Length: 183
Image 1 (cartoon, one colour):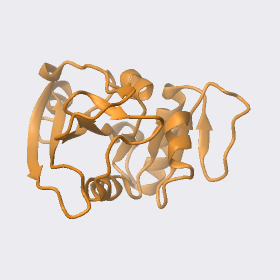
Image 2 (spheres, rainbow, N blue to C red):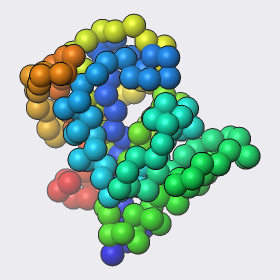
Image 3 (cartoon, one colour):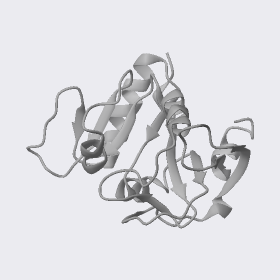
């Protein structure tokens, strides 16, 4: 069983070249192979998202605890844990992860949740989508200098994918130092 304080907080996001992460409460592209990466990374681990992101999905993500952040104290959905602040969601997710032996909790959107979480995360799994689509949701700016790039992999579009993409893993410098640079 993982100790609560050793559980990493990670954000996982797909961002277009122009910063777009969504359009009309949905994705601004269709890239099934990248979504499979998201699934594989998050399966079995707690996933935190805002209510609008959850509503866009329409149902809980399978095979992982779904923790939804909303200010609406009356909002409820079957199969999810509802929290009313990001801090409460992270604390709940870490307890759940510890009980499951998971070592990572994932932040999965939307823009406001990403913005609030950015100063707290240890790892950013950033998929850079090689498109510049129209969109109304933008990933918040962040200081890349606070992170070390530990992996970068280009992926050519598979049949059915709308674009190529690059998966980049960024680890917070302080987190690497705290762990003896062995993350």
